[in-house]
Length: 382
Image 1 (cartoon, rainbow, N blue to C red):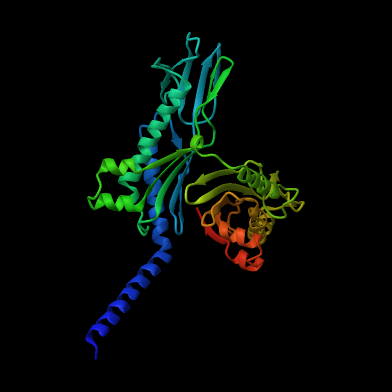
Image 2 (cartoon, rainbow, N blue to C red):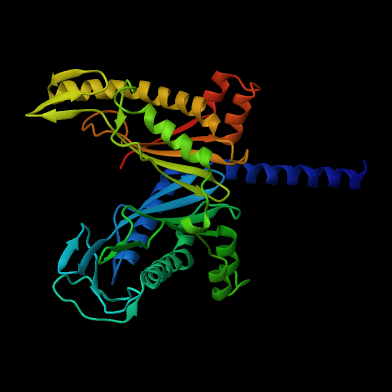
């Protein structure tokens, strides 16, 4: 017997076994544990943004695990603004207030006090709208940085190559009025860090300062959205207006979407199914009316399988119009479904497809049935 050859064979088998183990590990996760970790992380991020918050108010921080990519947290944020000028006071909904007074400066500088107290206006440092935006962004980045550096590592099961992303999405841009002039001063902001960087810091290989420097920030100002993406968003929204859809419908053609580096496109949609009047319900897409709550729920619940199937088919048919994605990037839809208490349908679904699947189907190198099978639908309950 050749002892050397036998030893080599044992080593090769051992390496293959180890490699197979890690491949298996990377391909499957404990979803229950991941969901729990995301809930804890959402709570931490929410608390950081709420405590001693002079400007920013969060509501409904949401985290999602995306296989082969990592986790993405979305913070839909809003602000209330109190405008003072020319003898008029304007206000908008929200929990945080920025007080603004006209100054005598010909360049329309303004005196502001960033404070949550709606009854007191204190003159502060002269700041232009751009400088105020920088002040707001600085606060937001500080809280996101604390989350990524000190708490993101609590999310287990992520591979070193995967990342943690935090998106701050402003539903209503800050708009500051001074006389007849107005300036929009806020855009969406995102930050991300690699799991491998967090591991390196834990192992003492890089300092905290170096870890902070590895956080990558992007904003709408630095991210150009291609025309084909905007066109696809309008097409997809039109498909789900009541006069075309046969199931659920959207209330607006404006779909929120973002382009994330190395991921692709994320879309957010909210669907409805009916309107009500004096206790009776009308399903707008089918024309059924005078339905009781029980009848309405039964009909809406029965629509769900058809809605999912049509959503996948529409994504396959019209997603081919997006040409600016790399083959390994994806399109991800986060879909909040119509309310249906007591129904079997989920509260939300996440629908994902690789750009390569769309390109291969468009070139007819992939059959329609096979392409539909490659579109993933994940159900979620809140």
